[in-house]
Every structure is written in structure tokens, then in C-alpha cells.
Length: 343
Ligand code: DAH
Image (cartoon, rainbow, N blue to C red):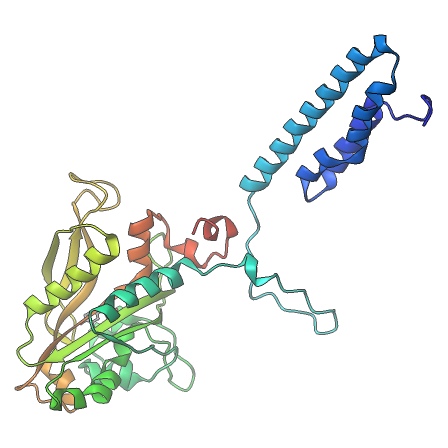
């Protein structure tokens, strides 16, 4: 190459800066042959020009390094658009190429739900999945909700024109679980089952309320089962899950399917004197629970004189929000990669 055909520092700068703006792998710019060629030109220059040219090449390199670093940093923080999983595909267009699965990850609710069910399995519970559509008998009737009882209003959800219901709670599985596992009682064992599932509510949406969320129901029945067993079971779950000792509190509540019924709260893990997470009360209401109502046991064919049991239902998202300090429940279904990539 003659001196006239050799690219100048300025030529290389212009070319690489444009390429840098267009490329998806900015770091590759620093390995371009044009840059290497500038370095190799130094030795062919007259001695008096070498120092100045060398400095110029070094300066170009450090400018490019800074631009590359800025591009990488911007890419990291850039808001990525949400993926619209409901977007229709045009059947006449070529099918979109799926992303390689190595780029995906489990949803945080899935990961945390696995941890929760793992803890219950180690405590001896079986796991039965809930269902996405059910009938009035399982959602309400078998759970001691009389027809037209106002307690039904707390479970406002979605219904098909055939009268099928998108379950507003995983309690919809209680009657089935009690029937399916009651032979255990005859063999002197307990019924001990947890039921994870999606539930649906016709809610006004805000930072704490979603139309679709995840619950874990628990059912335990045996001889001589008491409120003490209920408290011990839930405290063990929460202390395992949060990995620290917690203070818990139960306060009276009302559910048609338990008697007595309670709300179970735990001392706020974020503060000692009060903070915005616990509304400055020091306690966070976490779940509903109670001793299974004799009518619910009888409805499943279990002798309520001989056997007693407890049940609970909690929202997984709320548990996860407290663990990871997530301020808005709507993030979970937003499909925003910026949120999901943090887990
Ligand atoms: N199903 C109730 C709800 O979603 C939660 C619940 C409360 C479940 C008490 C239970 C229970 O099994 O015993 O609000």
C-alpha cells in the first residue's frame, strides 16, 4: 500500500463510529482490521512522523473504547418493550423464529412457588394442582356458602354463560381433596395436601390487587388437630421461606368454610418500628386460615366428631413481593423484561 492509498486516522474514525452506531455487538469494533492496520502503518512512516501518528492512533482507540462502553451501558439500562404474548400471528406470513430457550428463564412466581411447595413437601404434604374453571358447588356450595349469602360477594369473579366459574380461590379444591384423601384417615394417617393454583377476581386493579394471581391452599385433617398445629405449620413455612425467625399473630376473621376463622399476620421483616410496607403497623396480614367447618368435613363424608382439621389460603405474589421488596403486584403480569431479568 502506498502512502496515498493508506487510510488516515480520520477515515478510520468516521467509518468505525458509523459502524458502532449500527452494530449489535459494539465490542467487536475494537477488533476491526482497520484499527490494527493503523498501528502497523507506524513503522513504515518516516521517523519524525511516527510519534505524532502513534499518539493519534492511541487517542482514536481510547475514544472508541469510551464509545463502546457507553453503548454497552446504554443497552443494559434501555427500557425493553414488553412482549405482547397475545399478539396474533398472520398465518400467511412465515412463522416467527422462536428465541433460543437458553435466553429464557423461569418466571419469578414459578421459581418461588417451587420453593414454597418444596418446603411443604419436606413437611410431608402432598401437592395437588388446582383448576382454571370450576362450578358453583366446588367454589361455594361445598364450602358452606348458602345460596345468595352475602359472603359470596367477596369472591366476585368471572362466569361463563353456562354458569362455569373462573375460581376466585383455591379453596375450590377442598371438597375434592378431602374426598380423595379421606381413606388416609381410616389408616390413622392425616390428610395433608397443598393446592397451588391460579385464581381470578373481578378487582379494581392497583398496586396490591390483580385480576389473576396465584394461591396456595392447604388442608390438614386428623385426630385431635388444633389451632396450635395450624400456627406451628404456617410459622414453619414462613420462617423457612424467609430464612429468619419471625413473630406471627392471629386475629379473628370470618370465612364460611372455617370456624373459628383467622387472619394470620407476621411481624414486618423490613422494620422494627413501622414502615410504608406494613402501613406503620409493624404487622403484615398475609393469609386467611382457620379450623375447617364441620359442614365442610361432613360434605366430603368425613365424621366431624372424630376428626378435625385446619386449612389456609395465601397469595404467592404477596409473599414474593415481601421477600424481594416489589412495590406493585402488576409487575408480575406486565411481561416487562426489565422486571423479569432481575430474577
Ligand atoms: N379462600 C380464602 C380467600 O381466598 C382464603 C382461605 C381462608 C382459605 C381460610 C382457606 C381458609 O382454606 O381456611 O380469601
